[in-house]
Amino acid sequence: MNEATQDTGVAPPAETLADVNDHLTAQQHAVLSLLATGQSVTAAAESAGVHRGTIHRWLTSDPNFRAAYNAWKRETVELAAGRLAKLSDDAVSVVSQSLQSLDARTAVAVLKGLGLLPGRRPGGRTDPPALHRHLLLRRRERQAKLDDREKEMRFR
Image (cartoon, rainbow, N blue to C red; front, side, top):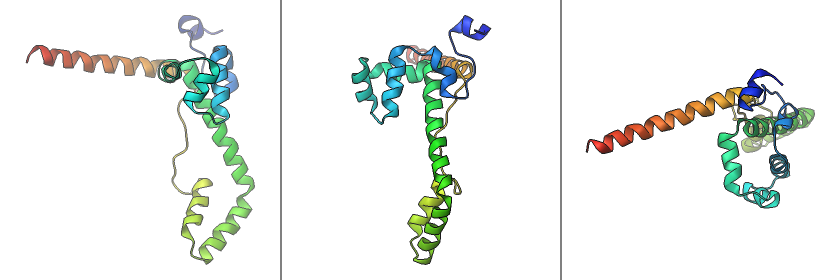
């Protein structure tokens, strides 16, 4: 266990879901597994025996859970991208056929799926210490805004 983990309870920087797994509770593991099967946050919460607000709190305030969630999303996208890459010859044929038949919608969808057109891929940080710092900064910014509003209210 490194110094950051001992001081903050935050896992060290992670690249994969396995890197963060040891820092999650049994309920958090259950929720991630349920989300991975395609369940909604509400359904996953119910199945795992937690309130859905708890999952949202974990996502916004628990850097270990957020890192694991982001790593899971990244791994899911990478697996899908790998599968698409294996189908790239077929995709090129479809693009060719689509373009020949003037079906540009299909062609664009395939190109986006291969990442050849600008498209947004799920991301997010998977580094718990960086997430911890980011969450602290966001919390301080929100508090500063609240303090400013309070001052404005006093002077009215």
